[in-house]
Amino acid sequence: MTAESSVASPAGQQRVPQGAVSVLPPRGPAAGRRGTEGRRLRRPRRISPAPLWFVDGGAVLLGVLVLPAPHRYPLVFAVLAVAVLGLNRRARLYDTSAVPGMLDELPAVCGRIAVAWAAVAALSPLRSLPLAVLAGAVAAHCATACAGRAAVHGLRCRALRLRPAPALVVGPLVTARRVSAALLRQPDCGVRPVGVVADDAEVLGGTGAEAELPVLTTVLEARRALIQNGVRTVLVVGAATRVEQSAVLRALAGHGCVLWELDADPPSYGAGGHRPGAGHLAGFSRRLLRPQGGWRPGGVGKRALDVVLSGALLVLAGPVLLVCAAVLRVMDGPGVVFRQERIGKDGQPFTMLKLRTHRPADAHEAATRWSVANDQDMSRFCHFLRRTSLDELLQLWNVFRGDMSLVGPRPERPYFVAEFSQAHAGYPARHRMPTGITGLAQINGLRGDTSIEDRCRYDNAYIDNWSLWQDVCILLRTAAQFVRPTGS
Image (cartoon, one colour):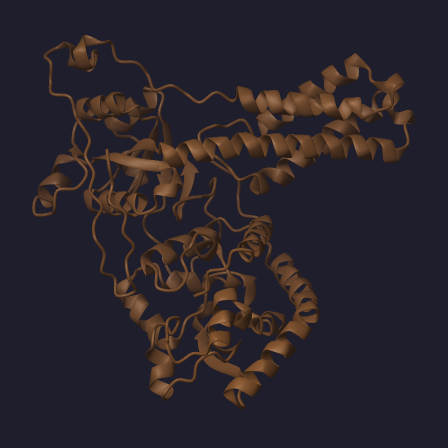
């Protein structure tokens, strides 16, 4: 089973990925019970959480072994293990329906380890130990658990990249096909659509479309596709409140599939609040079809992080900026700072600062030319600044002033905001949050001349699932990319 991967240009031109799925022909009354060559159909195999249990149990043992020999009580180890595993299970840290990043779950893992140790130490002879000894044991426990979980998640991510999990997409035909095409354009997301489930009316309405993924219209067809392809992931798009009660979804859930709801359509402009969920899939906000917790407001925390980090980085990057500005002044003459109007939160314009690497011919070119990354008129030093993103360092001043944030959707010029808002329904919704220097789209490779539709999806998924820790994770991943810069 193959899929063609393509990325749309800002003009919106793109090829539609195509795939194929084999659906078994009817075999009479027994068709729903037996598969190829008469074998009895089996439920998809679930991924075992045993490796995570083993990692957490081993981390407890190492934490206890750090204690002085007289205090390595077997009962303490047993109680700690039960407490940590119980707290982790309650927090769904053994849920194998998705593969989280270790940074994403680090606060939950370390927080529960600290709570378990505090409770056990308060109720056991460990309370006589010095605080530094207990802190060392907790630190060793946390480090081992995080390293072990990172290894398990890394192996699962690698396996999914090599063999993406097959999935069925359920919902209105047009929306389901659009989501399927987007997932096939992102092969590293770990999910590969193998079929679209839609009702008869929607199928009739799409008879003029190109042949894409097969359209399944009955419970029997969906069940056969599920068994033949080993599907255990179902993605629900569109009118979820309607399809949740459909016979198809009930049958798929009863066969052991995990049902995820994807926000295929962007929220209306100005919409607030958090859509409860478990993150995103290729930029689509994703959540299990069950009630979840609410949004954690964090405007003050985000602004505090921006002020502290941007101020510190401005001080540290000051000498670098001065050297770059001096070289530009010598090589290209006066005017080393480039000022350009960009659109920020709630559609408000602001002046963004960069080191000048290109001199537009006129104001019209400055406002409407999409990219100058490959301009032959730029000097080698200017190409170096763009490739290493050093020309973006002045935007730290925009962050410190409050025009931008460190993390958020990238700001664009008014001309392109108007163009993209007409071409892509989700583009205006990006302005619900302050624009940023880096963001979820950028760390997923969507920089420069890449698909605006994909950028919209990632940006809105970032906003829908915002948390302060997500900002920290994005900043760390951005810093890691500096060692292998690609520029814009």
